[in-house]
Image (cartoon, rainbow, N blue to C red; front, top):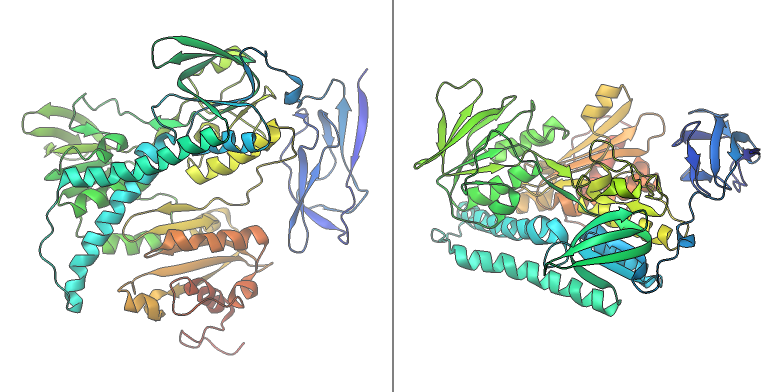
Length: 560
């Protein structure tokens, strides 16, 4: 007979009457022992109120905005079955099994495998490609950044002519450039292979498919099949580029993987998709000499980024593009001897391109894993998980691109660590307040937390502080006086809730803003933190000073 259990707030130390800011579960849902039932916010930190046992949530007795103290009755559970979340209780078969099976050797997968091994787990890692590192390391983040570095140095050398230093016109040796990119990737993949050996993580090269809730069949590269049983599994199978149906099968039509192979430098390049991937590759090919057109279905490039930052980027990149078409789409394409003839909505005549990059997004790889055989549910190709990264089958966890947006490697790494710790029986949860994003274009754009656009759309009251880099000595010396640093503060608490930067090294600096949000920093905390001078990073502190009306590097705004 099920028993009803009252859940009360545990000891909160010196805190009382703290507001409820998040309720991640709903009545009727099963909950695990130590799963977060609600989140409260003290003066400088957030606190999770966990479930003391596994069961099913019957009733939530508080709502968002209510205040609670130690002993406050907040929820009722029915306790009716053995604990739902006890993956270590499922022991593998000794002859073929492991404590933890990880499917996918990308940043999330290898991080999960290595963390689990460090915790004493026997780990098998299945990777379908020849090397570890996944899309990010092999055909994504790392090779693209290697090429973007070359592009940035090439264009910076040209800009130096305005300061009295001139070089000859650059010559492009594609073979050497490909070799540089490949060497960068190989150094990292070799390092991963070595770390797997050092941790005694067994790596199986092949494609895994679930055959039951505790077993997979792996189609090995050599043609054989291997069956593996496991106590727990972490699915980190990542995502794949969206293939556009209107495009023919032709080697001159590539996705991001094909573009990074640098097949040739086109005279004219069409980029379909004005997001991060498309614009990064446009930067690379433009620096190598291509003329670029962009077609984006959404109303804006880099949708989701505040327009004032995109405006800076657009002005700096006008020289790259012949045409940028937003709010439109490609209707058809035909492969001809002269190139790819592309018909764009609203245009009378097709345009011919030497190379077409389709960068219209990515989709999760959940459909081909046989997850239904394990009882794992999918939602639109994604795998729903809880804060412990568990699927609806408690001993099978999922991370990274497979579990939803944002599809970013650094998110996957943190989720991989959480999943490994949970699988090993440790208390852990993915409770990141924010996840930063970066477009590694020239200039870079980085943002984290709430954007000004989103704040306006939701009606949230915020105070926006801007520091133009035209007032930064380092930016002026670096020829980057076009840059901008922006911070958003909650109008009531004055805590930082978002930030964005456009300019060189924006991605290197945005972590400070993310830390400020995670730590509950307010404008004074950031403004009074002494930043080294002269640096681009000090623009974060100066933006906070500007928000307080205390910035002596900007014209006066009145006494405060």
